[in-house]
Each structure stands twice: as structure tokens, then as C-alpha cells.
Image (cartoon, rainbow, N blue to C red; front, top):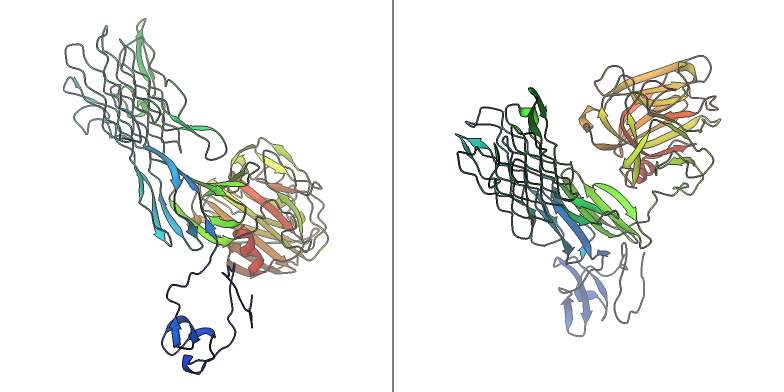
Length: 575
């Protein structure tokens, strides 16, 4: 916006840019009351009155602000001990960032890994439970607050030289190991104040090997072993920051080696691992693996029997969630979940990244006509179904499940028999664009993303998928619908990584094809076949007519009847 010859009374708040009127370059030549840049003295703003030049050193610039940002920070859980000690959960912290974040503010986010365990024999005993990795939320630029650190969960106790060892300290403490009746027991590890609870102790007595203690959780301490049974892990703590009530940071349960008794089980939900057991009954031997802590909850792993590494529970990875009002302020980072009538959005970080505030923004993830020109013909959001937002091209899903995607829910393709028949066929045109988000769990041979036809190459008007083999190249096919087609597979997808969301957009105009990834043009090529619309077959997602399956997730699939511009592709990427 531009203001000229405007008299203001009070304050002026501007969203966007403010262009001042042209003024003198030297303050000494200006009229009284002029407001302009002082190019001669290097002052940003100034005005002239009867006393001469005045600096506006305390001038406040108005930019959109974001207040009341809620946070959840959970560290990675510890791993269970090799002789019965359950692992502690990762530390859990919740609260609200107290200062307004303005446009340009950036926060750095680190997600703690769940702990593994040492290999048998390397510590002088059985598998030693290890502590999980810490998670953190820290200011990067444009915003200041005290760094928030959640401590990794403590590892479960081991058994060394005939004695039980204590669980390790952590966000929540690990449980102590089981013990031989002739030797002493041990205590659970300590939790960090305000983040978690202590682990449980070795059982006071038992018929053979008294049970190990359970790991502490965010909501409750781990329990002491009882007799020959391991102590239950401490319960997690409930949070609704994502719009769905979920337990986080549950402790892993302990168990007792060489007993007919069952291992302990968590006293409440929360991502904790159940202890395994080593059972001898009727001359037979049965080994049951301890359960891993649940990923992205910071759950502690269950205590196990230490003769084989696979019997010990690993820790669950941590998570960071930031939630705020989504009405006017644009933010970016992680996975997004919009919820409730008040217009809230949760940014879910399952891996390290950044959260940024980008000023005012209009939400378009549910808008079919995103560019206001009727060019978007269909939008599939996969909100627990395969429906098109327009209602004209609802699809049919085969062996598909749904979970949190890049924006709200996404479709999960199992890599073997899961696919969606969209109901959308290519319109008669010489231009087309396809846009979608994808998260590949494992590369599959010619695994389809979006393509029409049931297997006859010439019918695949515009096909985007994975290339031959499992190297992760993008396969692009252009066909005329009757006699010939052209394939291109020189764009590598491997640099974008597995289990990572990234955006793909392909455009075609006759023989001119362009491929954009994450908003950037990565390839332009000329097809030997000119694109012709008017498809005979519906588009398929995650497969090609019941074959060539995708192992991964897809979200926000859009079809356009034009070749999108660079700016329009960026709009989709920043959606």
C-alpha cells in the first residue's frame, strides 16, 4: 500500500509493506513535518520541525504477531535392561511460550532418539539399558526465550557379577534389574524434577530371581518388582495438544528371568514397553521379546532376558508439538493438524527441524479453486477416505489405511496390494499439472504415485512414479492415448530421503514437461510424444491398475487443466 499526503492522528498499523512518499534527500531542505528516509546521515526514518532534523530512534514497526503458542517437548525413551529392568520414559515438558512471535521468528527443534542397547558381552554382563536422546526447543532468530530441554529416559538396570545394577537416571528413571536370591537388589534410577518420575526397585523377595523394577513415566513412578514378576512401568501423561487426547512418556515394564510368571505390564497407557520373559515349564523353554517403547511418544522399552539382544525393548523416539490459532498467522514446519471450531493448528515434529512464523496467510489446504480460475479440477485430501473435495470424482480405496500426513490425514500404501482408484480421468486438453505430497517408506520397482491406465503404456496420458529397480528415480511418462508414449527417469529422489515428506509437481504442455520438487524446478525435458488428454481410464494413486505399488504415504493430490507457473507451484508447496 502507498500513502501520500495523509494526516494521521494516533498510530498507524500496516500489514504488508508501507511505501513513503518521495521526499527530499537532505533533511535540511525539507518542510516542517516531512517524514522521509535520511539518506545523508544513514538514519532509517526522520522528520523535520522548527528545530531541525529529528531521528525516529524509538519508532515501532508493526508486523503480524503470534501469541499463546503451546508446546509439548518429549525426549526419547531409554532401552530396557538385559536382566529385567524396565526403561524410563523420556522427560516431558508442557507450557506456553509467553512472548509474541513476529514474522521472521524461527525456532530450532531437536528430536531425541529412542535408545538402543549395547551388544551382548561388551559390558561384562548382559544387555545394558541405555539412556534416550534429549529433545529441545530453542530460539534461532527473531524471538527470545529460555531454551527448553527434555532429558532422555534412563536405561533399565543390568546384571553384573551376580549383582543387580540400578536403573539409570534420566527424564524418568530406569527400573532396577532383577537379582539372584543370594545377592543384593538395586534401586530404580531418579527422574528429573518436573519432567518425570523415578524407576522401580528390585523385588524384595521371590522364589528364584526376584523381579526387576519398572521404568518411571511422566505420570507415575515405576513400580517395584513383586515376587518373581517384574514391576509395571509408570504411566504416561495425557495431552490434547494435537486435538486428540494422547498419552506420552510411559515407562517400560520390568520382568524376571527364569520364571513361569508373566512380566509386569504398564499401569496405564503411555507408549511404554511391556517386559519380556524367559519361561521354563514342563521341560520346555520359551523366550518372549520385550516390547519397544512406542515411537514419537518417548516411551521406555521393556526389560528383557539378556542372553539374546533381540529380547530387550528399545526406547521410543521423542516428539515436539507446537499449537496455536490458525486464523490469520502463517506458520511452517513439521506435520500440520488443523482442528476444532476455534481454528487451531498443531505442528507435529517427529524429526528435527525448524518452526517459522511467516506473517499473514490465507489457509488453502481445503480449497479446491486455489488460484481462483477454476483450473483445479480435483483435490484428494485423504481425510479417512478417498473422496474428491469437489464431490465429482470420489475414489475407491483397496487395502488403504489413514494416519497423520503432511496436512491432517494421509493415505498409507502398503507396497504390496494397496491402491486407490480415483474416479478422475484426464480431460481433453493439451496441458495438465499434477501436484502431491509423498513420503516413501521404501523404494519399490516402478512404484506408482499418480498415473492413469491399467497397464497399456500408450494409455498413460501423464504418469508420475518411481523408476525401475529400487534406486529412487522419478519415472515420468507422457502418452497420446492411442499409439505411443515417452518415458523419462533421470530425476533422482534419493536426496530427499526415505520416511520424509516432500512435494512433487509435474506439468506438461504438448511435449514440454517440467518437474518441480519442494517448489524448485529440478528438470525440464522435451517428450518425443505430445500430451493429449481425454483419458479412457481413471487415475490411480499408489499403484497402476492393481500393480506397481507404492510403499509409503500420499497427501493433498491435485489435478489441474493447465501448466502451472513457478509462482503457482510455490503456492502449493507453501500451502
